[in-house]
Image (tube, rainbow, N blue to C red):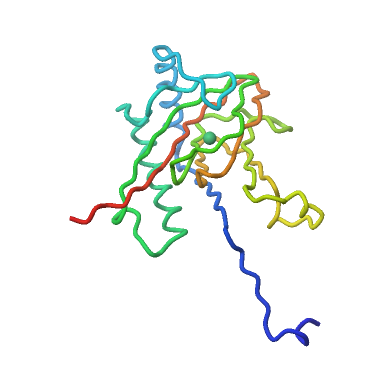
Length: 212
Ligand SMILES: [Fe+2]
């Protein structure tokens, strides 16, 4: 009907915030090795308190650790970062034109453990690799939730539109990487399971490569 009124109509989706998910192939062996390395690290590192409430958060940059499993995960994380970056821009080649720095840490969240809402200032992409994710039949246990940075969104709720949803929660499985812009506020629901949830989180920061 509106064809009679408008010659043309279009709506651009401005200011999009990508949320990417990568499922790593044949991850079981990698996860087992990472859990073993996690236990070894915890025995010698009391951890630090960051956004985690309860549980253990490793000190320093985990990618400085030369263990094969950590370096394998680093390689996978770099591929995911490059893939998502190529997905959102064709004006540069992130591998050829930019230098990439990855800074990561391991989280182990026992029952009751959670991560309070936070962002990762200073990075471009932030990511989480799920080493283990306890199975639950219902509820929010272990879910990561992202909060839309736009203001006034509650006013738009009555439209029931995906475009203006104020938050989005997902429960990634073991072997999955989620990747998102570091400005995106996120938090993790308490682990209600008896089993630990183990993740490796990372920040990916690009710098312009100096031309020689
Ligand atoms: Fe985070």
